[in-house]
Length: 137
Image (cartoon, rainbow, N blue to C red; front, side, top):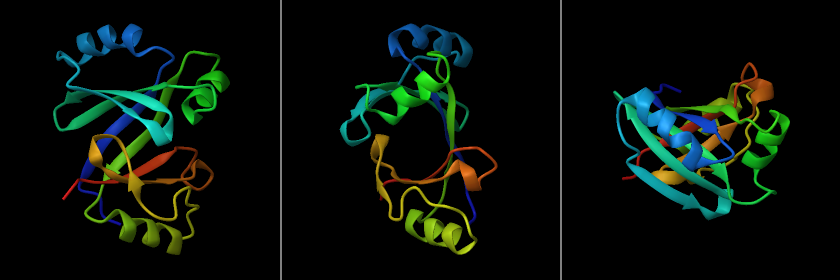
């Protein structure tokens, strides 16, 4: 697997509207995209810092994995995952599995901003939830 760059950092928050002013201040820019990803039960907001994005993640229901993460983190949210950009998500997932990493996603699926994504389980990635992303073609 050879990532081209860090695609984004995912940060869980219980409230996008409350978190956005801080990230506008921190990044020196406005949020450029807000969208709901229904199958992941999450609402996202994106900021850019150079070539790297910050993705804020707000749960849309209590069953969301983001809601569970926030609950485990004392209701505060926090750094949820790091995402790496690759040329081919399916190939990267297969390579990761062959290297002995535990996959959350066996095959790529559609994520926010039309990226093809797949996650690696933190128990095999030094405790860091890792996302593999491919730009839309």
